[in-house]
Image (cartoon, rainbow, N blue to C red):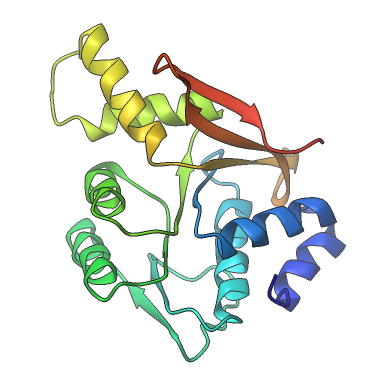
Length: 215
């Protein structure tokens, strides 16, 4: 494993993540796994964790792309990493396609929203290995359900078969879901990682959510 960045060790020292979670997530980035960080809307920890792992990746010899709305935390991209600021969904879509075309080793995308979801999963389907983004959701199951709903452009209610197909499609593109929660409801800057879930499809095609480590 590559030397871990100072910012990741700072998260451990602050109690945001444990040392074992730190090691596990850094290894997942090394292995180019697809990671989704979820949590409540205004919790800063989702983006702080994404940028911290992006900085960890910047310490390697890998070439990665970071697409941001804004930069809420100090970030040192490194000489082989490119940071783009996207002011709208169309720009984000174009930058995701750029990451694919230049064969980026890892793609970090700030908060996924409506029209950005389909292009994000498109670049994964087209062969981009190593992706990470954040999303507002209450649980891993809720995240998969919401993403599948937003992935559909239909204005009408999906039937059961359509819903299940899209949920399976989305879950097949995500390796890990990391949940971030507030330690103190009155302090949105006070956060911690409460679970890391492996997402997979079993032999019957059902979605499986398994804890990736002991908490």
